[in-house]
Length: 219
Image 1 (spheres, rainbow, N blue to C red):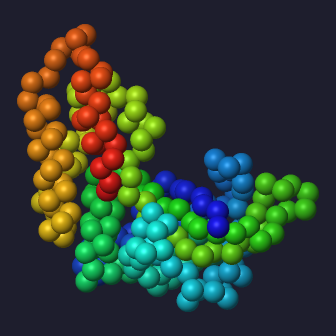
Image 2 (spheres, rainbow, N blue to C red; image 1 turned 180 degrees about the vertical axis):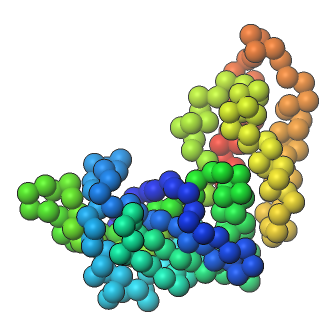
C-alpha cells in the first residue's frame, strides 16, 4: 500500500453531529511524488468497494476514528470525503476535536490516502488513471521539518502561535487522557517561557527539549 498526503482547508464541519467534509486527494495536480490523479481515477474503487474503505488515524489499522458516509468522486477539485467521526469513542472524539481546533484557527486539515495505483496513462506514466482506495486518514502531527528551523521561543509564538493553540485546546471537549497530555505540554511550555533570553543570546541547544516536546506533540 502506498500513501499520498493533502493539506487543504476543510469544506464543512458539523460540530453537533461530528461530521467533517474534506478533500483527501486533488485532481490534475502534481504531488510530491510527481504523480497526477486523473479525474475519474477513483470512480471504480469507490463504486465497488465503498463499504470496505476505512477512516483511520495516521494510517494505523488499529485506530479507526469513524466511517465514510459519502465519497464524491465527481467533484471538480478532487476526492471529496464526508466522514462521521465516532464521538462515543475517545479516539474518534479527540481526533474530531483536533480537526475542529485546526479549522477554527485557520489551519489546513492534513489528510492522506492509502492506495494502490491500478492503472497509469500509457503515454504519461505519472498520471494515475485508476486507484484502489483502501483507506484515508486524518493526520495528527505538526510538520517537523518546519519546526526544526525555529531558533527561539519568540519565533515559535509569532510564527506558529503554537503555545496559544495548545492553550485553546485545553478548554475543548477532549478525553481525560488527552487533557492530561495537553496539561503536561502546557506545563513544559510555561516553565520554559517564563524567562526569555535576548534573541542575540539564544542558545539553541538549551531549547532542544522544548522544541522536541512541541515537534512530538500531536494534534
